[in-house]
Image 1: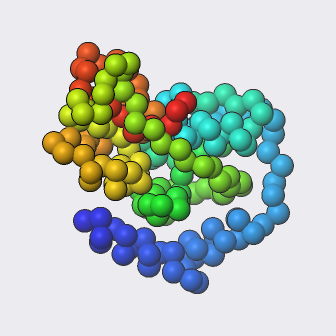
Image 2: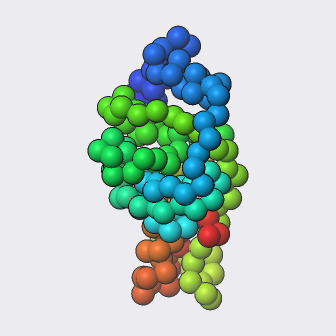
Length: 186
């Protein structure tokens, strides 16, 4: 399934495709001055990488956290928020294919891009040792980015969730002492 999706994404992003022309024009175009204050839709929860990107773009952002990438697009399209922040690429694991699929579904404009250094950590409750971890949860992009590390672990279940910050929140609220999350230090 993933190979088919990546192949489809590749055809959409090939040189000369309408979507690629739009993306190139947005990146090369004149940088629009963003307001200091804005209402912004982001996927996830406080501490998510989307919040970090939002903090880089706006001095004072009032963030509405959405459950899914689709919800972020819908919030912007319906006028709930004038801006949305979404990931589209990362250097170690490639395109965020779900976001590219949604770009074809919604009408929107890319007004700014920001590059972030993604700095994942394995987070667990105090006192939990790596050899005691039996399950690691995170977003599929983070799991892919940390794939080599995860391959080296034995008898550890890897579970996908909506967002790295949500994974950290789930671990902190869990009673379990054998669970960890891949997330940002924030």
